[in-house]
Image (tube, rainbow, N blue to C red):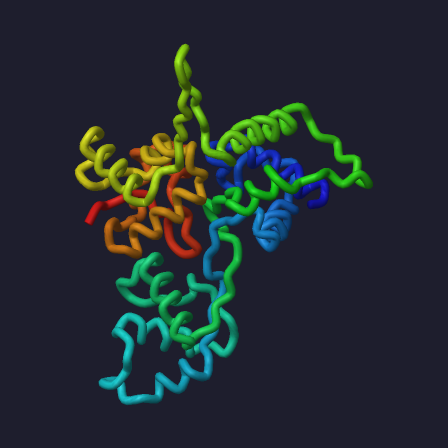
Length: 285
């Protein structure tokens, strides 16, 4: 990491769950460079960030599909309308230029994702322009905890606040890097109790318990689970566990529509998506 990248990461370490909005005032000193720094750190897999489709363009396969009999097309009517609108331009266009009556922006973005996965359009992905989130990855935690050594050829000026962020990070994550052993002893013998990270089934049981205790009626906000399980789990470990539970059809994850009922910190605890809003609620199947 160069000096600016290091300072960027150290500022991120001072945020709850090592995640914050890219427009946060903590990044003001980077001015217009922060997006480039964020992308560069993303390429190193040390951070990740909210993405969105910046431009789209129809591919030859998409043009060929539009020439087929409409009754035989393997796509929905709304998908067809979006594809037809894209085909009218020979250049890349922004999603905001795709006007289809009755189609909301989040529905449009979902359709664009589907059309891209089917190889019908080319999409250009960039950092989300509005309310983008940036967070430290599991690889970033591992690198800072186990591998990072400052370059002796560079003499960056690091404030005590940033140094404090790093020291707190190390204390927390070095404790988590090995199972925690609590030694119980008496005059005759002693035994060691090891506290391990919860399994996926244990996480599911915690979700069920929290939902009952908090009365969230099977719509448990993710921030409650983070408060319960981080630590011993890292943010990324919990996210991946939730994805596994979802893929096994044990839970569903849904996005937040009405943000006014929650604080920015609670909203930041959701799982950012490349397209659309953050996943915020956990629903048990």
